[in-house]
Image (cartoon, rainbow, N blue to C red):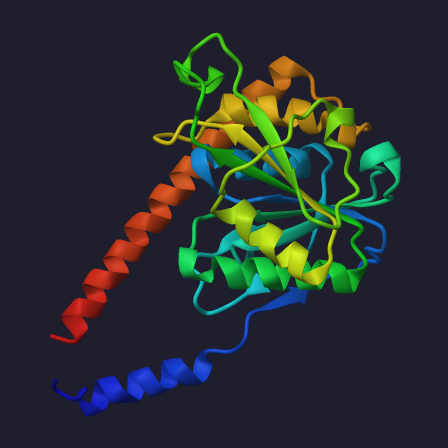
Length: 278
């Protein structure tokens, strides 16, 4: 196997020097003790990201932190002329959680997909940070493949998508109170499973909500349906159905455009890199 050229070796050494441990950088310190953390990542149908973004917009939540790691896609999220990491944290002084027991709502979203190999580390970093900050409860929103004959409502069928929940060992959430059936048995993978593993290891109260969603496109209808289930946990938000679904469709369009742009830019960067090393 040929050794890298001197020029390329310098680049590889420089890149290696830049790699540091994953961290959450706080931009605006907030007291998060007793808060509830809502996590929405771009899983199947992008339902988690669409739902969490709707909550952030509805409550006019403000950005407080971002997850930093050079292995994330080289994509910046622009807010008021400032560039941020694609994984961001927002907060709102909103009573929430089971029985309205928390005084602040925190939301974490990922604007674009990232390398699945980083998922375990991302989940561990976020759950560790949440525990350190005193977050009382974590809720993860996840889209999964439909098991309903004919598909979910988001596919244009009349039958509503199925929602199920899974709790961490330490969770105090009562899924039956919110009329959410639990997953009785089986195996799960993806974003939610990574957060469940971290929560169990760190003794953190976490629940994941799984909803059937389309795979081919962002599923705004499934995201809207999921928010109606989350509604009792956020009693001060009025999830008016028509407005919610209209906004979810717009968010679907925006997120789809962002992902296409990111994919196109990454492909262009790979082509440029290949030309540099030929």
